[in-house]
Length: 354
Image: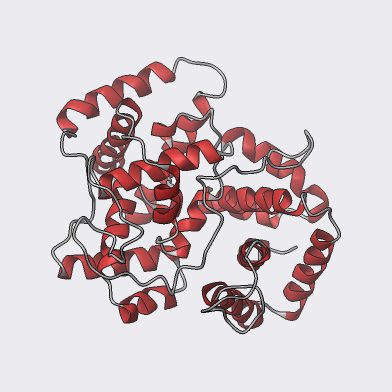
């Protein structure tokens, strides 16, 4: 595949995720869409994914997806979700790489691409439960827990038309910025931080932890390398000096270290599941690369920023996603498997780092 492989994987994962969700749906019921056995929201999500397939991909790319889809369909029923999970991790990992590094992977011929991938993974590892969470500068959905909590709160205040305006934007970054623009008009903050988080206290702690880990051999050194590479790439993109970027990076690390030191108050599984299903679909997909335990922890952090203990989300009462009551509209959020439940481990051999 040519560099379009990045786009191919994104599209087939979108279609595959919708079809997997549809396959687990109950029989026809009130509010069902035009296809038997799936909900109206699921039907809309599948239709949108197929529209992207028709409009964004050329004939050769469509043929490659059809061939891959055919091979996935021939797998035993319990294996196809695991292979889709591997593809999702590869897609997310590829998207997290600096532009020049990603292009090197995409330019490699198919016969030699795995060798390039293995070399690249050694420097930019795939996130795992063993990777220190507070060193992950690139969070699910393209933002930190504090930013995502703000996205969730603003999303809950948007009208159906405003949500459709956000969903029509092609890039996640553009969706997020449009939501923040709506938030500014509502006088809602771009971040929701814990009330007792003080940067002047936690930034020195983050600096000390980074200095400690620089002396550790093995896997813990890799996240530091990745964080520094991302910071350097961002500084070049923005035309800023490293000295100007460093405080923002350290503050992000400090906030993540705070979360690690202050676990969020627990949330009942069914309530967390209901909360997850109210999130925009493009935020939900950010959880796909994580194990069930880590996804649950991250989702709980976001939940508790939006709903500080002892306040709770009330799924039985139609409400906007904010501490105050209101309306909700989930028409643009297709149901997805919740990270609260068990998540299958990826299938694969020692030849694949994903």
